[in-house]
Structure formats: structure tokens, C-alpha cells
Amino acid sequence: MNTVLRIEDLHKSFKIGFIPKGKKILNGISLEVHGGEIFGYLGPNGAGKTSTLKCVLGLIFPDKGDIEIFGQSNLSVRAKEKIGFLPENPYFYDHLSATEFLSFYSDLTLVKKENKQAQIERLLQLVGLKQAAGLQLRKFSRGMLQRIGLAQALINDPSLVFLDEPLGGLDPLGRKEMRDVIVRLKEEGKTVFLSSHILQDIEMICDRVAILVEGQIINQGTLQDLISEKVTVTEITVSGIQIEDCEGLGEHYSAQGGRILLKVYEEEKIANVLQLVQDKKGEIHALIPRTETLEDIFMGAVKQR
Amino acid sequence: MKIRAIAFNTFKEAIRDRILYLLLFFAAVCIIFSRILALLTVGDRAKIITDVGLASLSLFGVLMAILIGTGLVYKEIDKRTIYTLLSKPIQRYQFLLGKYLGLLLTLFVMLVLMALIFLVLLLLYNYPVGGSFFIAILFIFLELCLITAVAMLFSCFSTPILSTLFSLSFYLIGHISWGLETLLNKIPQGGVKTLARFLYVFLPDLENFNFKTEVVHHLPIPPKIILFSTLYGLFYTVFILALAIIVFRRRDFI
View 1 (cartoon, each protein chain N blue to C red):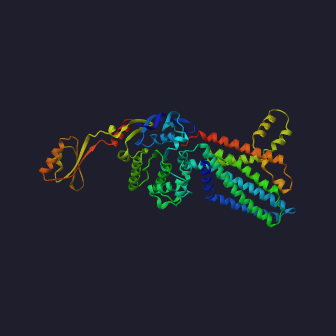
View 2 (cartoon, rainbow over the protein chains, first blue to last red):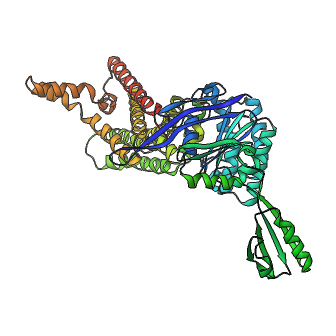
View 3 (cartoon, rainbow over the protein chains, first blue to last red):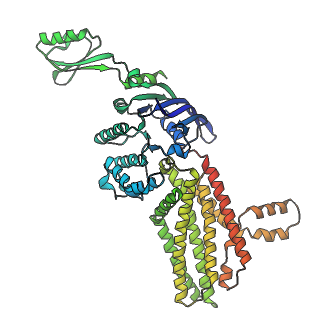
């Protein structure tokens, strides 16, 4: 598999305070991102996700470590020609209109003059800002800034896109649209490096993930490797039976409208519950087998530290 | 090409900023005020108008250079626009030069506007305008090139308020440092003289760009002095720009 991004033993510390004291932010990060995948970079706030991205993009300089993008130094202009970046809570030149802004950024890349206008229109269409093309960015809402941010990240048709918390500040519909765009990027053959602390997003669309806690990667691999398919608990919502009848079947809670929520841990007891409901002429409203989620792994890992 | 794109964006940003028009308005007021001042004066009114007018041009040009120049890089870092800009395929020096040239373009346009107002006033009252008038304005622009570079250098590592103070100090020191030459002739040999000589060499001498006296009194400006002042301005500016690039090259944007 071809490696598009390789980070090896990355260290970074910042000096803070009046009498400068070093604080370690990144502590030996190593990872590889393969071509054509969506790579999730997970971690709680302050774990060092954005700092890693800034090192990769040459905004800060690591104390130690190597970073290669498409086999070239991350600081080279050649490497930067192939990447796009959407920062967290993006903010842009508010004196420019959406079209002027994209035109300015396109002049900084290799986009050919004759393709520029078409590319800008295509991107405005993609992120759903066609109506706001002439509006100054100072009048944009947060969600709109996120969208124009994505458009500028794609202006040079990059092969590798870095997205830092791309779903932050978006409403449910906006999140779905953003997810769809990210999946479409993958379908176009681009590689996406996605940093986030919203686990559901990552779980739904990522091929591989790395979990970062306190500047160290504590777990990485494909989602299948990290998450076992085994059912850990089955949640059954029933009605028409007494709560006393549920003793010994699992954890039980009263729910709204006389319903009972049962958490059954042993698989063989599911049949017992079904039998009980049939005997008492009750009703089953839901039966949901729960497998281990990324959140379980994540919480487990953070707690261990 | 990339430098040009950044320069034009900086220009656009500056001319859409209200502070520029405020300064331009006050400059116009000052230039016109010189005419009223001349009415109160006994003697050659043309001299007063030319002197006060050129001084206004220089002062407001410097204020524009410092007030916009000190925010030039800081604003990009503070508003985090620099994150996406530097992740594009550009080098850091290209960014800095683009910002610098963009502000120079702004200052040039503003200086031309101020000079036009001034010129109209002079022609309106049939005051003589010689070639030295344009040379004086050209050297005001050269001084602005240097001051802008200084403001940008400070803006690379300091806050706008501190940078403004530093740049204003540079401007003031630059206009009084010629006194050191007189001092050098007065004091005896020794440690103090060495220190004074050191300061004389390294402190900027912005009076090199001041040709107001020649314009006011219609004195000829020797070509040798023009050449010296031009080279002095160019070398000093390139030196300060190089320093700014070195400071900016290894800076972390946290």
C-alpha cells in the first residue's frame, strides 16, 4: 500500500509562563496514512491533535522527528501543492467576498488561470454556497465559514486533505452534508486525514483510526481490529409484564408508558425474555444488540492513563 | 506571481479599512490649514505653505505606514488566517514580501492622493512648483519604505501597541540622530566618543530623506546627495527586510 503521509517519532514542547517552562505537547508520535483512505485522528481536547497537524503543515517546528508527505519533506512547496487544509473554527479575510477569497487562494496554488473560474463555481456548488458567492465573509455564519473553509482546502484539487474538527459548529443537516462530502472525496481517490473528538463521525466513515492521549498514540489500526464484533449487551424494551418477573434476566429499568428496558448480558437469556413476554401476552418494542463502540475503547483508554 | 496575489490582497484589505480614509481626511485638513497659517504670517507665504504641506505629507504617510504596518503580520496570526495561507504552496518569505509590497502600494496611492491635493492648492494660488518638489515627495516615499519595513519587523514578534511604540521611536530617533555628528566634533577622544561614533554609524539617519529646506528655499539638490540618500534608503530597507524574514522563518504559530 502506498504511504502518503509518514510521521516518525514526533516531539514538540512549548515554553510557557513568565519564567519559561517547557511543556511537552507531543511525545513521540509515529503514524502512516495510506493512499485513498479516511484516517481518523482521535483524542480528547488538548491531546495534541491540532499540534500534530500544525507540525505537518509547517506552522510550528517539531523539536525532533520526521514528517514526509508523498515521500517529500513536509516543508517543501512540492508537498504543499498536493495538500489541502481546513483548520478548526476557520476564520478568513472578512473584507473579501466568497468568490474573491477563493480566487485569491487559487492564485497561491498551481490552478491554471483558464480553469480558475470553473473550479471556484464547482466548489461553491459542492459546499452549497452558490447563493452567497458575492457576500462578504464578515456576514457569514459559523457554518458557512466552515463550508467556505472546505472549499478553500479543495481549491488546488489536493490528493491529501487535512480536516481539523470539520463537523464542529455545524447543525445536524450540515454534519450530514459534510460527511457526505468527505465520503465523496474518498470516492474521488483522495486521502482524508480527519481529526475529531466527535466519535460517531469517525466511526461512521473512517477506515483506520489512531487514538491520541496526552501526546502519545495509544492505539491505532482498522476499525475492525480495534472493535470486536461480539455482542456485549442486548437491550430489550418490553411492556405488559411486571418488573418483578424480570429478576435474574439482567439489569432492568422502568421506562415511560409502563415499558421496561432490560439489559441482557448473557445471550442464552434472550430466549427466556422472549418466552416470558409470550407467556404474559406482553409486547416487544425493541431488541437491539450492542457491540463494542469506538467510544468504549476511547473511554477505556483515557481512563487507563 | 504568489507574492503579487498576497500584495493585492493586502492592498484590498487596506483600502477597505476605514482608518486609512480618516488619516487621508486629516492630511487634507492639514494641507489646507497651511494656507490659513500662511495668512497669519508676515513674509513669504509660499514658503510656509510648502513647508507645512510637505511636513503633513510626511507625517501622515508615516502614521499610515506605522498604524497599518504594525498590524500587518500580527493580524494574520491573531485572526489565524495565516494557518490556511501558509499551508498553501508558498514560502514564508513570499508571504512577508507580499504583505510588504501590498502596503507599499497602498502608501504610494495615498501619497499620490495627498500630493495631488497639495499640488492643486499650490497651483490655485499660483505658487511656483519646481522639480525639487517632486524629488522631495519621492524621498518621503523612500522614507516610508524604510519605516514600513521597520514596522513589519516589529510586527513579526510583537503586539501592535508595542510595535507602534518601537516604530515611532525609530522614526523620532532617525530624525534627531544627526545631532550626534555635532556631538562627535565637540567631545574629546575616549570611551564616550567611541560610543557616540558607534551610535552614529548604526542609528538610522532619516534626515537623509528630508529635502524640505531645499524645496522651500528653491535651493538646488546636488545629484551626489540624491544618489547617496537613495542608496542609503535602499540598503537600510533591504537590511531590515532581511532581518524580518530571518525572524519570521523559524517562528511557531501557536
